[in-house]
Image (tube, rainbow, N blue to C red; front, side, top):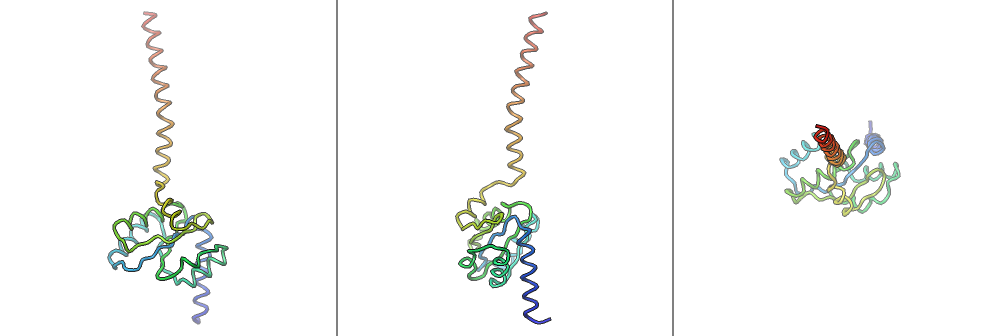
Length: 165
């Protein structure tokens, strides 16, 4: 298999990943140590996020094939991809948390559900809590009024019992 066939196979693989992805976040990793990279990869793996370093030209070809335009300016220097197939906020959130303590990590851009996000939008996306937290907050907000209503009904019942006694 020649070099060209290997590159074509990698682009095809990337195209398939991009088509399935909920979010793809591009990040600069220049200047991180091997230990930091290992820690980041472990956190990504635990969250179900794929973290890959791919040549920029191959990433650009795959993105154009899928119809993602506008990545050219973000694919300069060493760029890694964080790809999530389930949670569109997970890669941005994990990278932003990691970047707080590791200044070498820089969020560059992203594609979330087919839309191009610049650095500012990716940072906004990183502030959204995980799905489980959002669901818990939603259920808590529903539960509170219902619990108060049940308490009021119980108080009315007790008041009527006392009046009858």
